Amino acid sequence: MRRLAAGLSNNLHRFRNSTLHTISLHNSLSNSPVLISSTSHFPTSPSPSPFNSIWYTCGPTVYDSTHLGHAFTYVTLDFYRRAILSNHKATPSGFLFVLNITDIDDKIIDRASSQNIPPKQLARHYESEFFSDMDYLNVKRPDVVVRVTDHVDEIISYVSQILSNGYAYVDPPSGSVYFDTQSFESKGLNKYGKMAPPTSSVDFKPKHFDSPKSPLPPPPPSPKKDPRDFALWKGCPPDTSPDISFPSPWGVGRPGWHVECSAMIDYVSKITNSQPSVHAGGIDLKFPHHTNEIAQAEAYHDFPSSDPSSSQWMNNWIHTGHLHINGAKMSKSLKNFVTIPQFRSMLQSSPKTGGDVFRWWALGMTGSHGSNAVWSEESMKEASSIHAKLVQFLLMARSYTNDKKSSKWTPSELGMRKHIEKFLTSKEQVLTGGRLLEASILTKQILILVSEAKSYMEKNEGAPEVIRNTVVDEIGDLLDLMGFTSYTSRPYNHEGGSGSGSGRDGVQVAKLFREFRENVRKSALQKDLNKGELLSLCDSVRDDPTLSRLGVFKADVKVV
Image 1: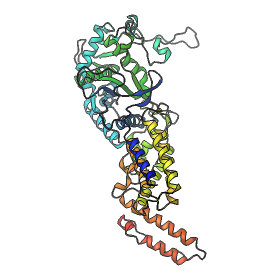
Image 2: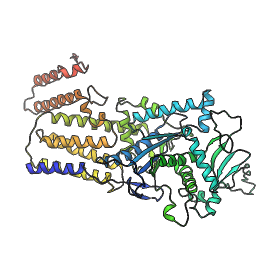
Image 3: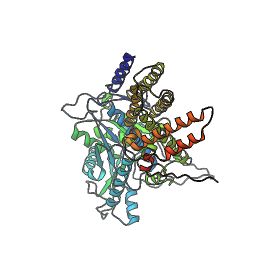
Image 4: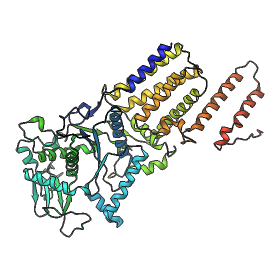
């Protein structure tokens, strides 16, 4: 039996020290699974660099509070990031995680004007609120934050290069610069619309019919040569406030939305000598934003059509699904959104664990990460209930590990060992590229192991400590990896409580009531029920110092 215990420890060591450096995600560009690694797609850099690859995530346009649709995206992408980092415990991940902040935009300007404050002040306020919300959700901060207003010079240089390459044109009356889709395609470069819907990649001109029943007015005059063209630089009247405009070779203006990301990725790539490898964001950005990013980046680099291997700018595009509420996509434009501050006020859980409840819902109760998720208060209550039961189990299990100890192995221990091995095998498959990285598979395995462990512990009070500790530690380790706070993964390490029964005192409460339940059952199963003994057991719980220390006071009430 000692060899069996040693074998369990060795297997745990093997799983914990796996050095496979890949995860499997769905690539929207190829529409197929791809193994993501910081070193698998590019040759060795010509000069030393601590980073091989850039993982770039589209950040918020900071004109309003972050809503749960954003939270769903960033919690999901945070899990992907943590999975990559967990596979590089012994070596650097090689990834530089970059997030952009769009802090100059028509929506920001309009909102600031309505509040009679400078646009920069509004943007900084909501940027700060965004990161505060991400902290609440335990989303890791990016390695690098790039703001549009900090990189206007680089964006102007980027647009100038596209013009020089012949893939853009200036509209003199407005001072705007547009991407030239027809020139891009006629010179043999990659076809426009790599991630666009089929019709949009060719033409999205409105159709006009002569039918008297449904005539459509002609489109308004446009400086665009092709409906697919888009603004690289948006010209402004010369007297526009410098708060919302910048000088350029084409007149004052500000960057177009699509070009900012491509230009800032190029800047970070150059100064860090690293390659752009992964671009991530919500599925709503796939078209037109990410589609236009690809086109303008290929035009900027002027990839030769004779060399297909060099004509791909970004290999991997990772998108999360829409979040729906009341039958429609959660969106600020539709005004059917729930902000994170609103969510925090409606949730019944403690402030310390509310973010974990949302994370459990987002990762464990929404299906595939590429599909749409449906949010409701009812689903959040269900997530809160599951979360509370998980925390209670960890407290209960730890109270067992602090109590009766044994080293004797029986067939029950062998059965429990098989459950642990199955849990670890599934974990390894998901986290090291053996199957698509789906958090719902991991949360399901956690709940299965909890169920098996509860049954095992109820039947085996004096179970070997290595088994009991292993269950608690392995579940805690996986919850840590998935981004849950220690109030969820290791609640027994916290003084007081988190609103879900956690804390070292919580361990004592769990132990107190477990013993109370056992004693009541023993008394109730006796042939001659002793009411005095039952009342004595109730008094022992009432008088226990653990409850009074927590501020729980119980007094006997006379029943009439």
